Image (cartoon, rainbow, N blue to C red; front, side, top):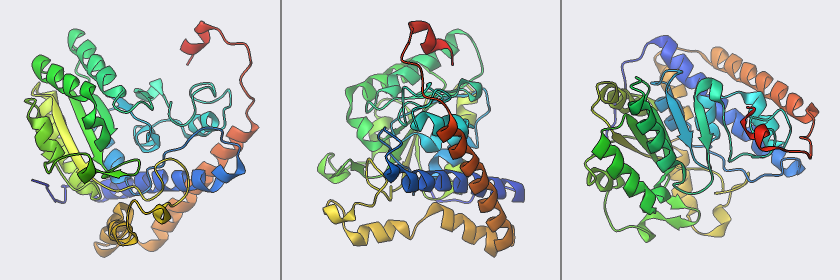
Length: 329
């Protein structure tokens, strides 16, 4: 059953959650604004509308915990602490990018904060994350591993193989499914029989929870519970968060004119904006005022502008490339 709740958070935590979600949103909106300039020569998959999941989950992690992601990785990378300048430089194909300009939007990595990387193959990072969790168990560390993926990934065989293996070995891994209903243009109901994705995961003997993916408190609450279980050696855990992407599957634009989703559906989900929801709560409870929120946005936009200037001014990578270069970052 889907869970709705307000986690026990203090005033500073509310401010931090809002700041982090605003940062993801404003970064994505900046990418959308700049993309038509044709200087970013890589596909982009924006997570506008889904910010509560990466921020809520990553707020429960330590710097030592390990995260892997998919093609829609910007929010996960930023929420884990990934370097913004390196991210923009990567999208511009510059040598100062997190993959030296050779990976693009779908290949983000920042080992300084243990964001181990993102891959565009649907479900491709799930077995890698499972292997990472096995390695951590063999090393007898206390670090946990998190794998972010979308609803379409549960239709890949490797998803089921990974959950089975993780359950068998009792790995400290958190499987996080951002269920935004669509695999490109195909709705979940056209791809799956009527059943909960979380129930499908439970069939592998994995503990499962489900919560509102547009409520950062609900996300944080179940993520905290899951992390506690993993720390106690009671993993793995699977989390499902229903949410919704506002922009097209791949690209900076809105695509409601294509007809695969109705304007009514889009507006219903847009009204559930996770950032507007938290802003309303913070203002109503007098945790923040509008002036403080405006100052947050100004600070974030200043950081973003500096990152874009850095990226545009950075050099392109050399045409010479050796295998050793792949390990230099």
